[in-house]
Image (cartoon, rainbow, N blue to C red):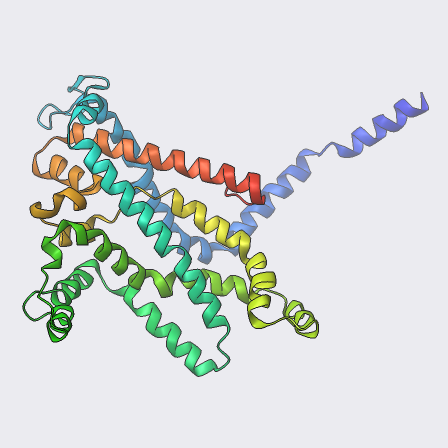
Length: 325
């Protein structure tokens, strides 16, 4: 009986009265009022994602319909997986998927490790002014639009007055029309991506490196560890969770090859290596008016990215105990 009464008293203590609940609700609204300016700053971001990310999800249903703009969404006939079957039976489908996958994988292999190496190199610079100068110069390409970057590539790679071909001619070679040869497209695309994302991508890793406890380096120096050994044994293990998180996000967007840059660089002569899912969807949806067909291809790409994201997250949690969810 004594135990029962003790448990009853403990249960009574755990019960929360309505007055306490009211106090909690009041404190929540007080916190909202207190942080009202921060919430107002966040409001445009929330509205953007609601309008342009969540509301358009309803539109993926047209990939299962024979959508006619004049009839409307509700009046269009339901056709099931017809557009998906048509896409995979199209002889161009595997070429487009292959090009997209190769560009995504090449970008991952080159654009992901270089910012890490660049951040590690910047961290070893002792002169603060020189370090800031290098950081500033490396950030600048990120703020250039795709139109400007592609204009620079067209100018540099021009077979007539381009800098690259001028150097080739000075060395006794012949001018090469790089943008008209399908074999050069992937190299040009990936190299420009590395140049444009190198400095900006290093920001996250520099922030992670700055959080490493300096006492680790002091202890390593007392033990006679070299700079390279300190990077390998201290810096890399400490930033490993950040690297794993960024890798998961990067793997989840392998098929999201940039539409603007590809469209500005490619031409029908090099469709064999340059035509990707995004450009094919653009031609089918906006230029040919096949909205349902284009939506089916876009939904397929999104599903593949989701599967890759979940798989990368599962592998990361299994091997490193780091994951997004």
